[in-house]
Length: 221
Image (cartoon, rainbow, N blue to C red; front, side):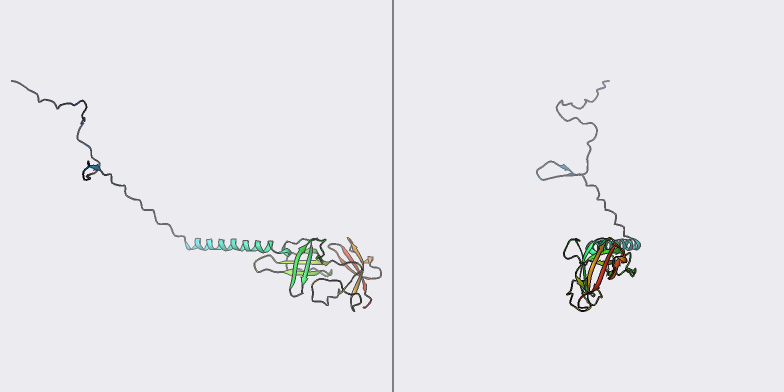
């Protein structure tokens, strides 16, 4: 009996070689007049999670922090734009205007505009300069530092002044010695707070900075 085996499939040296069934990726897409194109389905889009809402307390805290920062900024601006707030003992100042509307600014001690020396800087507006004869300057700000300064007038020996405070103008500008009720500065002693220096005159002594003024009634007094 002949046992003929079926002939094996022809092998083409330059043709395609098949091993098993063909593999497909998705259904083929056909374009007119062209070979089938394989279509890869896009991966499903991931939807980002919804943002978490801030709690009421967190929002209140954020608002408070914002207000605090704004307050600090305003306070700093008011501080750096206020000459009185930045003044220290020994500085010289120009204090002009009236007793109800004074204008304060720091100036060089050699300036012709300087009419006061800062004697003391107080810690609060409730403090007092005491009974030493200082002129007081107080500055308050709605959102800024409050300042209170104890001031010593800058006076020139040999000139006359209205030291009784009858004027509403700030400072002690020199006046005519023939005017009634004025006093002449007959002696000025710096770096000393000693009333005994004024032997035949009226002493006005400041402990900080140490200054002694000796006054006598002017000719027209």
